[in-house]
Length: 170
Ligand SMILES: [Ca+2]
Ligand SMILES: [Ca+2]
Image 1: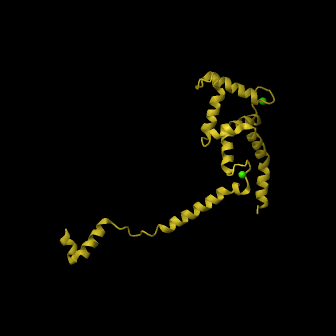
Image 2: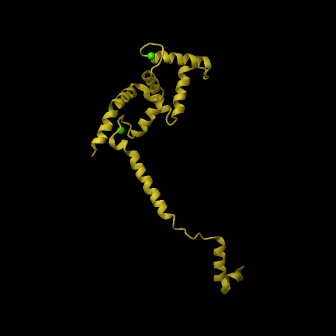
Image 3: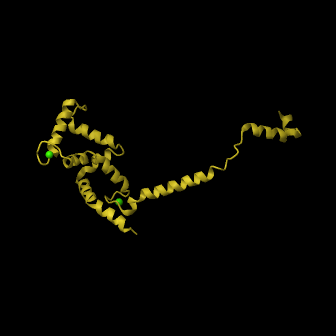
């Protein structure tokens, strides 16, 4: 059962997820799948691709300047020539989108485009397992209180060999 708090959290996130889902269905999947796991580097790659006007694989200062200027124009919704915080928020959200989609896909274990309550709380289950493992390991630590040193072994053997049979073999 989900607590009212949990329902509230999911409710607050729904519009975001619906929008994301729609864009994913729109064909944004390929790029983000290719960048899987690369995180911030992935979005850097996307910026490179976008600004590399002559597509020669390198980004010059001029290409970067032109790209950034174009970006300002694109996200300057009210056309006043500057980016407000909310205008920049839209730009920033677009930049980090590949990383954000990676995180969504990491949570959506069955890949159906929806993060269920179970998928959402899976990190808590993993955390609980790790905690159990740590506790189990800590419980085992006091076991080798007296480490057996090779020298001790030898001395013990010697005293056992006082009878002489092994000594003869040497
Ligand atoms: Ca503006
Ligand atoms: Ca799912």
